[in-house]
Every structure is written in structure tokens, then in C-alpha cells.
Image (cartoon, rainbow, N blue to C red):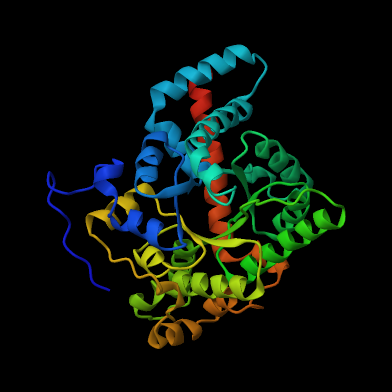
Length: 374
């Protein structure tokens, strides 16, 4: 893959207006391929610019929500004080999540035009269930139903663990639009798709309304890359690092092809970007790519070429053979590489759940500093 040098500042570098960005790579890909661009943040300023670059959706998680609140700390600190006055018995977690809900609804409003234009397939704002509920399927379902009612275009994230898979089927049955998260592997993606299909089939059997729910299944390709690098080091193996950069891309391509082949009513979503391949290698498919805003900016600044059939191009044999020599990659890549009972103990799952739980704790601390200043 070749790229051109970034445009000098002050010439044709991205500025975020529709007229100036119409032919930037992200906008061109959105206009000429079925691949949807979502922004991996609900921060309002970034989302506005990303929409101008072709974005028709956005995602959020505890880490992203914390960053979005931090990006406009004075505003959200003032709002927390107001909420605390309105809810004198509310604790840190309740107040923190109230802000996350408000931030999400505001972002969802920006995406309503894309939601309406696509009949509900796009224009979605992802809201993640509280990671502290990851062991309780019933609690996940109840929170998913609540979040689903925040705005017509909300899509709710549930982790792709054994417990989360159970919750997803029930939530899909109850009419919640879903985005599977804490998901890194082909076996997880297949389990998610089957769970959603069961939920939708139950709806149909009971004559419940059928509609475009816009279901997606995230594969956090960069986090799979991260975990394999940690695993390789723990095994004292020497592997060309160039091969490891392709692990997430390989899993994403395989999962997408299986979803299309089997006719699942769920799309694959590429997230957790670590390299440009996780955008450039997935163009052309009916799937979603969700880069952080800064990655979109870099893609546009470097004029990364749009390859309309890239998703159908196989990963080079040298990379795939090197990866398949690693048992841990085979667990992530083979259709039956893991059972649902093993999902929660997969290294990337443990690491990501811990990070999300830590972000929840950091949000509590932020609220604590407002309620009880040092």
C-alpha cells in the first residue's frame, strides 16, 4: 500500500466542512462503497467534523465517555453540580451515568438525519451497558432496554462473553438494537450473530414488528493485535512484528465473509484501531469501520487510497501462515477456536474488561471530586 505525503498546513489539509472534504478518502469511501464510516467517539466537536467526512454513526464506551467528558470538563462539571442538586440522594455512579446518558442523547441527535435516510441501518449512536454488570444477563438486558429508549437511533453495546451472549438474544427479542463489544475473535462474532438471529426469529414467531434494527458486531482488531503481542512475548517467541499487525485484519475479513455467506442480519464493525490497515483493508464490504477521530484525520491528511474491493483480497499467505503457527491466533481465527464458556478468559477479553471497569472507577472519582472537593 502506498500513501502520499500529508498536505502542508494551510493548503488542502482537512478542515471539516462538507465542501472542502467531499473527496477526502473517508468521504470518498463513504460515497462510493457500501462500507459505513462511524466515529469512535461521542465527543460532540469531533463527531460534527467526522459527519462532514462521511461518518453515519458513532460509538461510545466507558473509556471514550470519560475522554469526552474530560474534553469539555467545565461544562460537565457544572452539569454534575446541577444533577447533584436535583438528585440529593444520588451516588457517584448514578450521577456519572446520568451524564453519560445526556452526552449520548446529544450525540444521537446529530446522527438522526443519517438514521432517517438509511431507514435505521445507520445513523446509530452506541451506548455501552455498565461493565460492572458483565456477570448478570438479566441486569444487562434491563439496562439495554432502558438505554434503547433514550433516543430512536440508540444502539446498545453488550459484551460478547458467555453471559453477554445470553443477554443479547433476549435483548434482540425485546427489540433492542445491538452492538456486541469486548469482542475480538471469529468464534465470538459467530456466537453473537447466532444469538441475534435467535432473538429475531422469536420476534417473528410471535408476530412482533419486524424492522431494521441496524445490529452490528464489533471486532476490536487492534486489541487482538495487542493481546497477541503480549502472548508472544510471554511465550518467549520471536515473530516478525509485521505479521502481528495483520491479526485483527485477518479475523475481521474472515468474520465479514462468513456473515455475508450465512446471511446474518448483523454487520461486522471494525474498531480499536492500531494501524491504517484496519481501514484500508476493509473497504468495499457491507460492514462498518469505526476509527477514532484522529485516525480519520491522519487517513485524510495522508490521502490513503480507497480500494473498493479491498475486503475481498485475502491476507498475504506469508502473514497468515506466520499467524496460524501461533495457537493463540488459531483460537481467535478458527470458527470453533473457542467455546462461549472460554470467551471471558481470553486474554484480550480480560484486559479490556479491566480497562472498562477502571474507566468506570475513574468516572466515579471525577464525580466524587465535584461532590466532595478536596
